[in-house]
Length: 412
Image 1: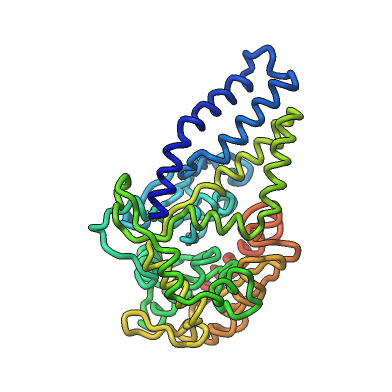
Image 2: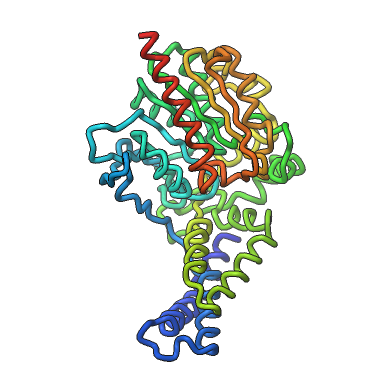
């Protein structure tokens, strides 16, 4: 019912949003001789702020057409290499002979689209041959395609790894650290030769009992039945996924905003002032960030509820009690895949120690092939995007991957 009411509200506001958008365009137009007058600027600023607060945000484009390789621009083409109902495996193919080590970036399925990792992809593309998991908005998946559970997520990752290995490195950002560790553990237990050379795990809840954040506390304070009753809804009939049970993106977005309301309120107030001052560079930076941040997707309900229970309430992975299709997930079985865990000192989503927990769980990996980094002064998003990621974190990732490649060659 709430989902239907949300859609109704959007529909009712649509004419007002369109009118405000037109007014914004008129007041901002370079052909408008009055656009720099204080009153006209105020009308434009108010119109744009209203539009941005009320409009629908669709999945952003990747917008990665070239990348600098050794100081020279190289064309990049995106192609879907594996097309599954709930995920597309995308290859960012560089038009150059030297591709670099293969890197599978597993994007989070936690509310935002995979394009949130645009900076991660663009940065790693300079030195690597990159694939990314592009998760599909669940409301766009017909009910006939069946359920999607956390164990199906693990199956997807296993399939992607096996299709790209050998000589593959896997990077998981936030939420997927858990299913990626499970996938590699199962492959190792099966003695499957198509395993990755290295795992780079960034800001994820491997053991959510450590340094609990507001996210962890919220899961701990509510029963699993509460999440089922309050957070799960059916997709309205105006989408291909009509009647599918989902955790709606608009609810996840509301929870994102509620975590730091003062920060977002201040950001919008600063945006309004930039518009009034004619500071278009600062205003454009705000637009780019919130175009991405406000674009959210629905998650399959069964996957969402599995994650809440297995990762945040029962802690089955660190307790050694997680079984997938009657097979125990045993990170200790991993012996041939190197491990690099990365955390942000100021991360308020995955607390310090939650990702590092993989170090003790992966006891079969020699210490010489394990590394941990606590990035000083870095929050959750700074782990995988922004200046500190590009200048401090990524160089260490690149060095780690190169080291594993050299080690493999020596063993060969």
